Image (cartoon, rainbow, N blue to C red; front, side, top):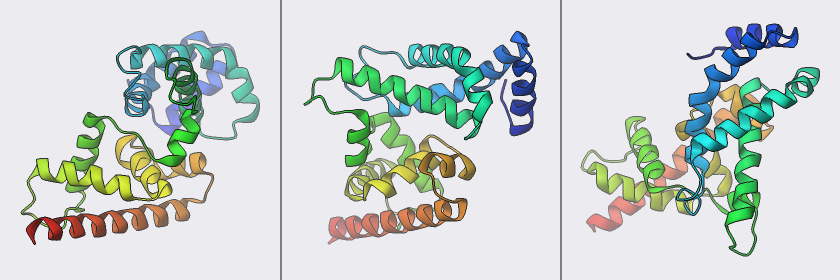
Amino acid sequence: MTADDNSTEEWLRRAALGDRRALDELLAAHRSRLRRIVAVRLDRRLTGRIDASDVVQDSLLEATQRLPEYLSRQEVPFFVWLRQLAWQRVAQLYRHHVEAQCRSVEREAAEGVPLSEESAMVLADRLAMSGTSPSGRLRREELRTQVRSALARLAPNDQEVLVLRHLEQLSTREISAILQISEPAVRHRQRRALERLTKLLRSTSEEGSG
């Protein structure tokens, strides 16, 4: 089961009237998408202890309890709100399990997006398919390595918008709500990040062939 904006609004309307089945359908429709995002964001030091499905289950339970609060405001799209609950849960787990100077996930994200090897490969593949690769001579494995290296050299804002779009696969509207910038600004930031990444990849490729 998947959800579009119209079906989500209908489920929310029915849930607000006390329809438990509508609430269950609403959460079920967003579960797999939320799990994918949690898997992307789950710190590598947590993956051996925490399963993304457990994080999602806890987040959906909290969403059930706090739905009246969301319905009274609806300041952001429903899925953005769900993602926020999951992000806060990941932050709590990080603070509890990881002792690296007790840094919060928020600070970690501000310093750069930590990606698992699998996530880096997926992002490299998606960027390659979008035409970011400067040369067809690059083998996929080389591109994955170079994308990860280039991402580490990007500014945090550029990293974040690429991860939101290409890994979390969020819409422009959702990214706009998360970053609190306009949709045109999101599109501009994404183009700028891709241009900078392409430049870094081209530079790396030329260094490797020189």
